Length: 296
Image (cartoon, rainbow, N blue to C red; front, side, top):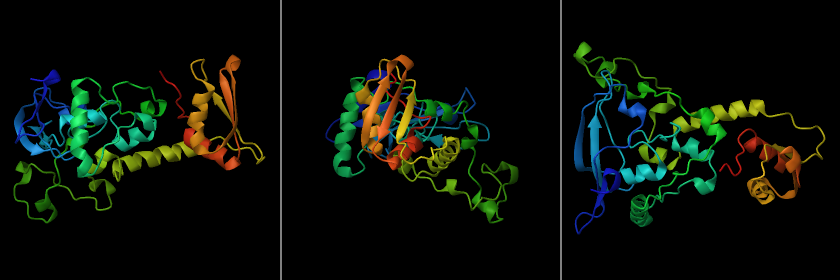
């Protein structure tokens, strides 16, 4: 058996089949019952991301919950640090799109979507896991993600699906029906969700809703810009001795051409001057209360 209960089987007819003893799950998907029964089926399904066969686990997380199962293999889950079932981040409990939006692009793992590079990427990720070179392994403090992080599991996500027979008025099982007897909300955008879109961080309605709420809150907290349009300097506080001028330039360079950067170590601050007022306003819009430089 491989390290941490993960084994990769290889051969003429078993190209990197994955075997595992226990799934990678978040607290929400495990449910509130500490004595759950879980079935294990080796090579029962193919991963919905890399299409390789993997061990599928199935369980019922609660009395009124629906049966859940793992959707992706452990290699893909570890590469993105997500739950094998809901594909939410294991550290913050947020969708991948939200987490990656507030991380530096150098810290984000890019997964190829085309089949040409997918198998090669999966094999490389397998080698990294065996060598303990796991992505997202170095925990980086991010103030925005820490504010958005879920403090408690949301067991409501484990509820049974709505009974389609009840919606049509044809369900005869009554209280014995394992599905929910309530009418669906046709205006709810959350019903259109896709495993692949959530993993790749695109077209995720849950992430879009969270990001929209953050955008509204942050825009309402932005300080009023000076009336003088010639002012193009931003104040940066909390600049420690570990932060160098070049790091500040690299962080702000993506929002426009920088005219000057002055670090005042005595007062632990810096001043960044842009060539244009539009660049300064754009940097303020994206970095206010969410700027992280050299958090190590």
